[in-house]
Amino acid sequence: MESTTDVLRARAAGHESLARTYLVSLGGHVLLVAVLLFFPTGFFSGADPEIRADVMTISLGGALGPSQGGETALAAQPVQEVIPVDEADQDVWVQPPAPAPPEETIAVPDAPRMPSRDIPVESAPEEARGSTPTKGPELRQGTALADTGARGLGTGLSAGGLGFGGDLDIGDFCCPEYLSVMSNLIRRRWNDQQQQRGAVVMKFTVQRDGTLTDIVRQTGSGYLALDLSAERALRATARVPPLPNKFAGDHLPVNLTFEYH
Amino acid sequence: MRTLGYYAIALQAQAIGASETGAGGSVVEWVARSTPLSKTVLLILFLFSVASWGIALHKLWEYRRLERQTSSFLDVFRRSKKFSEVQSVCRSLVHSPLVGVFQAGYAELNTQLHHDADGGDPAAGSPRPTLRSFDALDRALLRASSVEANKLEHRVYLLATTASLTPFIGLFGTVMGIVGAFQAIGTTGSTELSVIATPIGESLIATAAGLFAAIPAVYFYNHLTNRIKIHLSTMEDFSLEFLNIAERNFT
Image 1: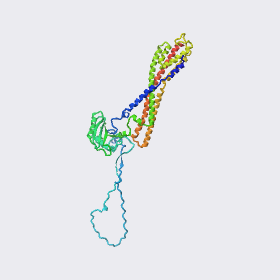
Image 2: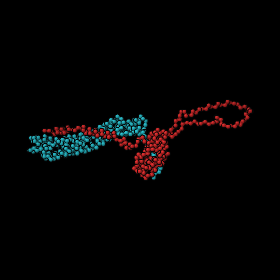
Image 3: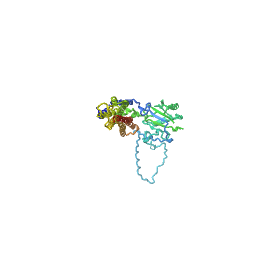
Image 4: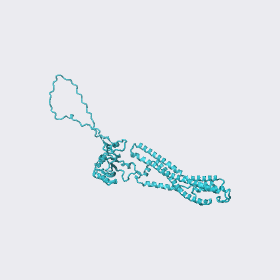
């Protein structure tokens, strides 16, 4: 006959192995990792993989600029830099020899005076001609960005309070002033009075000579009028100034966002 | 009404060179680029997650089978006239905790009644046998309940451990990753966002992995604990029912 303790001991002894469920769990985790491997790149970051990463992105519209009560664009102010003067072009300033002091003479009283002669002067003597002033280092508008520690408003294109705002990070692009000119040209031909809010992302390419090509709609606003207005602005602009020489590429892909408020 | 001056221009060319700085890439690529310490942390979290899911799935399956058998056992127990009939079905329902309680009570009952009656079924003995110690029977049932409760709770504590520990392990990995990022900043001397963002983003994966392991563990721990409470309550109820029957028949 089994005693109570024997029964309890037998009951307490039996524990099932977890090997099977551990294997199932491991398989599930491996499957999850495999799924992560094939996930699209922008799934977690929310970035649209269709928009190429090497495309310049500009948006028209956005936050108010300083002239409308917004914040002054502190970031990305152009800094003046010194143009280095080539060694060969530098003028060497030669010190002229000091004139020899006149010999000391003693005036002879009652000495006969030289008769005065009126010699007409027809041209200035060589010594009287002025020399070209020495040309030293000059200042010009630089392209480096001042690291003011401030982020956010202003593009750096808006210094002077033109009313531009929005985020700015022009990254490695060499010439923000060029983008300012290009954006202004497009903006002049853009009619944003559409009585409807929305944003349209247009993609186009600025060729080396300044022509706008490959104008396509990247992301629509959902309203035909807004989409057409944005496209019309680009087609009406058709040409912007040629790309700056500092820019190495032969074309500049741009994503332009038109924001309607 | 907006005027022309209200137009705002924003240049966002941070995308230029983003691919060059390595800011892009999938999660797996980020993990591949992380430091050995981060990889170790992620491996530990992976093992914790595998273990906690394994335990949770095992317990869910075990409790489901246990509940089915408990229901069958109670049905048999309440329909049977003799304890010996119930004892005969116990072999096929060994996973039910009530079977353990019953077997312990039955063994104690047999032991006590064996001295009064000469063999035979204690519940059906004639002349009527009596219990020598009702408290001893109660204690036997309590012991059995305790053993069964331990079996039910076996390994469930690992879920609580995973739930409380993994977020901290993940946080540790993140902190160490950020320390490494700042050291890299000190080395390169660059404080640009594109330089800082990538290593910090990579190190935050450890925290995400910690939460990934902890959240299911918390849910399963609460769920299983609740089910254990129900089983304990069922066992207590059954013990009282067993004692009542014993008192009615053997005192």
